[in-house]
Length: 116
Image 1 (cartoon, rainbow, N blue to C red):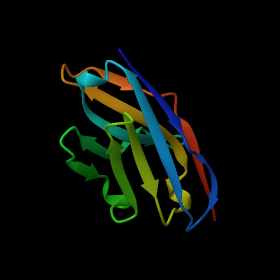
Image 2: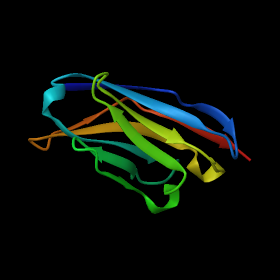
Image 3: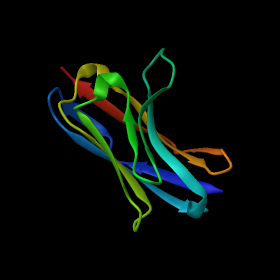
Image 4: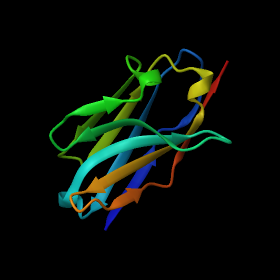
């Protein structure tokens, strides 16, 4: 079992920045990939960014150059630095982990609201 707790969401004006954090606990040795997803009202949940245990990253096209995912293995925490935020980034952001056995775990979500 892996437990994920997100923090760092909030309200920000367009052009501003936020940093999301996701602290993992439990069977963290089994985690292979960690990522951030988001879900806006009326839309499907989508992958925003992901990072492997080896440090490889990938991003959804609309956030490339604005968002950066990173992980601190000593703190068992993954971060999402979000810069140049746009109103269309407004969503609930969820932390996700996938274990070596391909089991999915999710955090409770944190709201990000970008005002125009």
